[in-house]
Image (cartoon, rainbow, N blue to C red; front, side):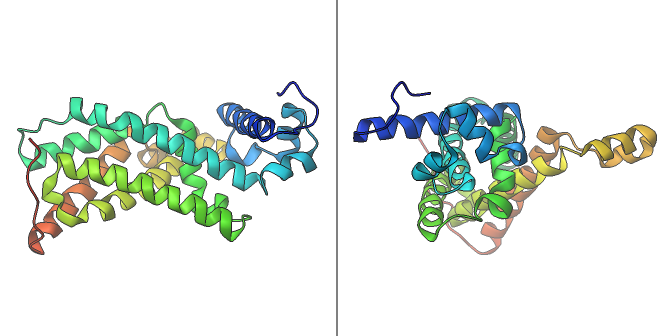
Length: 234
């Protein structure tokens, strides 16, 4: 909450904008995306709803910005984890498994990022202007480029398939996250009929297996198509 009634300077407007984002981020730590409303956000930040909409055109615009923030934080942390978790001297099949494990494990404690990624295409990219959509998509492309460069550094055998792999990985994160968080009704069904728990997913395990499969498949396709792997990093 800001300590002034009306933002008059650019600095005060930016401070208020950050307060709205930080308040929304705190709400996401407490509740799923579907429960984050502009009315509650306005109440917590101490502004009228109309004032919040002067800074962000919609609830979805706020959440898209938070998605980019969470995504960039993850991308910043990922290289050190990959350096520690991938043995550069191992065979390519082993490195592919290790890279998948690093990515999946790195998301275990990033609930907000996974929640936002799972809602990106179906919810967050709706109810925004073309300008906001384009700004977010440019940021998302930059994040994908950074992750694909990291993937290529540890797996040069991907050739020029690293960006396609990374895009598929991002989609897989959202899909697996959604399926690994069953509804209360489904949890009750599992409890009533234990045979149904065969379909219950552990997020990290299921994601790691899917990413390993995607990575191995991309490497195999690169080999079949004769893509040059590029030099191994020194």
